[in-house]
Amino acid sequence: MSIIERSIILKVNKEIAFSYFVEHELITKWLCGDAIINPVTEGAYELFWDLEDRNHNSTIGCRIQSIDQPNYLSFDWKGPVEFESFMNEADPLTQVVVVFSEAEEGTKITLLHNGWRHSDNWKEAKDYFDNAWFGAFQVLKELIDKSY
Image (cartoon, rainbow, N blue to C red):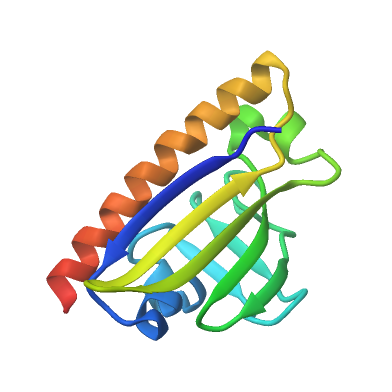
């Protein structure tokens, strides 16, 4: 099984960095248009990109698998419309794990996105998300740099 791994260092403490992954008003500034997040184990982790069609291009139905605020967060993940026929029906879904650790300059965030299968359509989806996470982290870094 292959894993996407992305890391970034943000010039804020772990508590602030963590809040950008679980607080509605913060996650919607860098990752999605709307969100329903209940930051407890088995709580909702639903992010929406198309607000007119919330059943598609979303993580609707996804749940937090484990949480240790402000150190660790893991949650189920679904794909956009072009990948939903296989990603969103997979059992288990792909999973995202985010680890927050202290760094000299602030907080290091390490994201691991796993659960990828080995067919061509899964490889295409993995490549899509490898790029998407890179871009999302760039937006988050720019937002943090402007805000703090």
